Length: 379
Image (cartoon, rainbow, N blue to C red; front, side, top):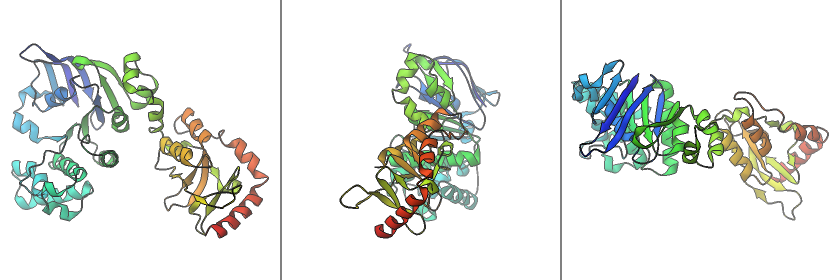
């Protein structure tokens, strides 16, 4: 565990960066520090590895004051990932990753073997190790940075806005990769970001900071979004915090309407191929039977936000539930998604589509026949 015990930092000119912070960072969990620029997030992070020395209070690592530890030795036992990776440009990727093992006295063969394992762990091909950093994309460089931080298997990982310099698509992939790694490695992670959406996606607990590193609220992501401590926190979270809450809930909570209840929604009909994979939507009331794209979601892997997005994009106002092979298993209306959001986590909200399903039962056989006929013509 990392503990900030009245930790503070006052610069020589009198400027207060952090004032008397008390905070516990639980072992094996991700704690995210978030707040406006200049609130002391990075200063706090760097107190842990003594890149910044506190002027008051203490920072404890597993009960030991880090001030009592030799800085170089301390840092070799803590993984550190920064924005834009900070790789050595003159060294190949494999040797960048092996940097800390080399410093710890590992022989070259062992260090490189460990580096190769980690490159694979973070999703990079083996040949990546032979390249230089400039030959990699920004997202690949960040993955190398994470691999380097994990090279000596440190129990603590400090991450200072590590994904902020890449585009949104790559950033989402890196966030997903971090969550996957954490599910396997269970590191104690202290993560700094200015992005509240990233904070609630990654954090087991989120610490919202005010000026001088004062804690405005410490909570799990769901509590933070649904019960902000005050108007200041609510303003920082933004007006769309309800939508962010959709991204915290699994899509499996949605009551999915089975395909056997019919493939028609109003004038729209869902067309499937022989393996029940969606081909498109057809407007049976239109003069031409043009196919419109199908927006789908995977109940076991996606979130309510993904499902709602699929329903909003659908011309029939419903999202299509898919299995791992891309086959349609059912549908969910926008109402069903929102009802699932209001239900207790882990409880399927059956009421949302009950009326639709009941109304569809009498015409299910006819709808199925019509849909099969449509599928044949759609192909």
